[in-house]
Image (cartoon, rainbow, N blue to C red):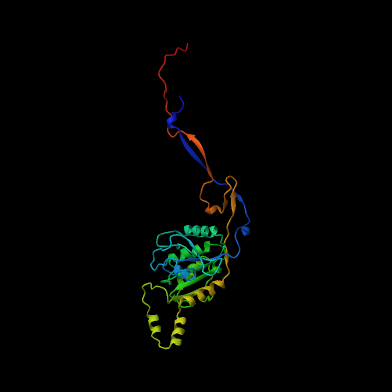
Length: 299
């Protein structure tokens, strides 16, 4: 049997996986005072519009059920150093992104920006009498953010009164995944309609009747009663609710590879450790004689 033909020998990279060990104490990795509000909800529920109030016009706003946000984006709040708003692709969004992928994307975005204290804003709209699948998906996702996530969650109903009603489906979905938010919860429920937002195409007969009231003081009182707010008032109401909630501390595991030295949370390190080049023969070995034939007498 002769050696393999040189022309058939190829180089091959052997992939080596990371071997992680504990590297840093969790508290020593992140700077103090950096917090974020994580938005959750199907597209069209007002997530991006709310974030735009706090972070400026760079936030893309959509008014349909199709996603306007392709990945998690962290926006800095204007005039408030260290506070961010995370606009994420919603769990159960129209393009089929699953909640585990969204969770990983959110955690990686916060990790890369060294933010580990969050509050949660769950935006809902539409028919809420039934426990729809999208509500259950979003509630499960909120639960997956960590222990006591519901203590740090504000539910905002689009086009609702300040103390929103008719949310049985949303609240029941939350209860199935650990929430204790009830219909009379004044701290973690909020409803409003933005008077200065671009119209989403829906008729609003209630607003039309209120605007017909001639007395300005009485008209403004009715607007507040039914949750119609200008941008400045909406910001104040949302901030007051969120600031009253405790923040949720995310748990990141900071480790280092003993072979290549890369450090970070293993959930977000996708590159392989390193490769070792080897020579291999990609085809089956065949018998062949590389030279001419010669007569040989062996006895």
